[in-house]
Image (cartoon, rainbow, N blue to C red; front, side, top):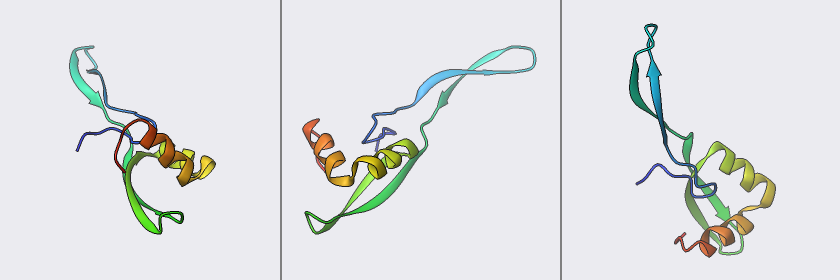
Length: 78
């Protein structure tokens, strides 16, 4: 499973580790992804999503039904 938030689309970005001598070695900055199960009252079932912490806050704000509609509009199966 890829490290991509299903709500925000956040994904890993690349950068550098910098030592005290300013040597650069490549590294990845990973999003804070959590797997979370949400009860969808309209479908009478649980839906499991892999989301970032910000994605969870968006669901708190907009509601799970609105977010699922957006995800499905983007062509993702949920």
